[in-house]
Length: 256
Ligand code: SF4
Image 1 (cartoon, rainbow, N blue to C red):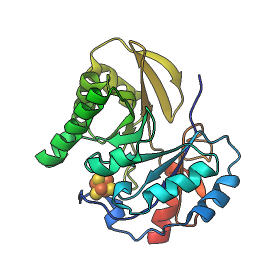
Image 2: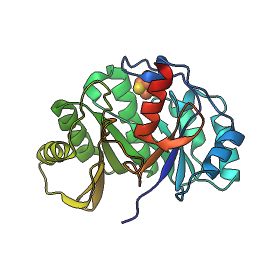
Image 3: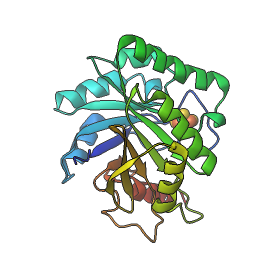
Image 4: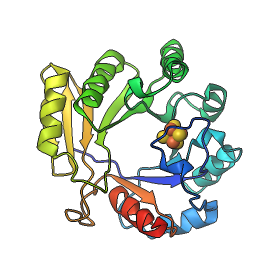
């Protein structure tokens, strides 16, 4: 099976929401210009399938369309990872018949009602326009999070091309094991799921032809540079791309 390697770039460190767990508000991560991003991308040995613009909330950035244009001009496919609430900006970003955004959903019970409603409104508008969101993203840290993520996926998989359930990175305690995540997801789905790829950090399930990717953040002791490959790279505070867990460790050290 083909694994997508995505390079994630923060383009702003503010957001229109203020989730209490969000690191974007606690930090002032450096934001790099397009020239620097392209230079950092050139150092990556793996073929890059796409560049994900993130933040904070990337749609609060006034330069998002310029960044997109400049990266596309350099031959890259560009999409955004959004909280799904700034619809005018999202529709401005859409250029073709695909919706080049991934939407973070997480556990809807942790968000104010208006935020949950906005995300549902976006899904409804996508259905109306016949578009699919590239991915639904669910960070999970408990059995309840997993249960609600699975319900959301089963109810809305018609409008997400794929969904990803990722364990929350916790530096203070060992994270959930992949086998436990897999067991809880399988139980919560309550439907037959075929495992089509399995590694300590990533498992891919197929439910009636629909792919659900499970990701597990390693602890620092378990971490190896290959842990997240194939997968997601993240631009760390030194301006280089690393597998996402390593970038988190790196940034944490810089913050300490
Ligand atoms: S929506 Fe995302 S970026 Fe915005 S505050 Fe919440 S976690 Fe942070």
